[in-house]
Amino acid sequence: MSPFIEVLFEVPKEIAKGLASGTMIRRGGVIQSTGGEVVAWLRESPEFARGASTLSAPVLGQLQSLQMATGVLAAGQVLTLGFAVVSFAVLNHKLNVLGSKMDGVLADLAQLKSDVAWLDRRQDIALVARLRGALDQGNWAYSTGRLEALASVRAVLVEVELHYVGLLEGMLEARNAHANAALFGTYQGYLALAAVARARCEVALDGAAAGAPSLQSASKVLVAVDKSFREPLRNVAAHPELLRIGAERERALSVALPAMKETLRRMEGYETELNYCAQNRIPLSDWEQLGGAEGNGRLALLRPKAL
Image (tube, rainbow, N blue to C red):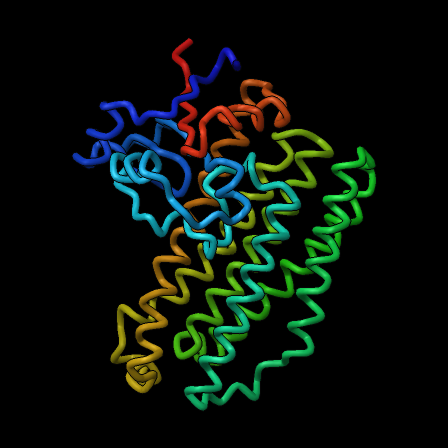
């Protein structure tokens, strides 16, 4: 047990009351006071990180106490609540989930007879293949102790990130992002996943302090893209293309917006984890062990101890 952290599997009354009253808030996988102080980190059990979809009664009780919807643990969310459970294998699973989502998005667009002539599927497939190859190589390097190979994995991930930034910015400039909100949100998920994988490489190579700046940099890009996506919705009169998207696409937009926000919040939570580990010189391998298998499938709450 870390001398810095208390691991809980029941939600303390003060946290439940704080969330209910608004004196505490959840940002992704971190619970904070309204002043920004970390109260606790949330962490899924390994089975949820790997995509389990059945919620037990104890977990449902935890979610209720934490003011969280059951969808927060859905397999479709691209990022886990906690950074420590985002292994390369879990990231690869999330990539599969995104791939299935992409197939569904394209099928829906075809049903709507959407004009997606601008969408280059060959380029998309090649890009996902590069991302998948990087994650496979990262998993091999990490599991076999050949950490020097992670430097080349990182280089591929940087390239993939830049490509998805370009795709997102291109959709915004062409003013087809809102009409294709599910696709835009999927690209955002690919970008976040690549960024987290890059941070994972950096943490493995140089420690927690090396990964936090990368997450912060990626978060700034994601926040800027998200802001550019949301701003037209606040002034629809100046964006007539929004008036023509139709009911089906409006529904897709209403689903994409909260999912995109949750992804940003989880990135913020990851930053607080890495910063805490760096400040207290906690190796990520030790941090990963907290709240592991002993929780019987429940969410773990990692609460900083007062020292």
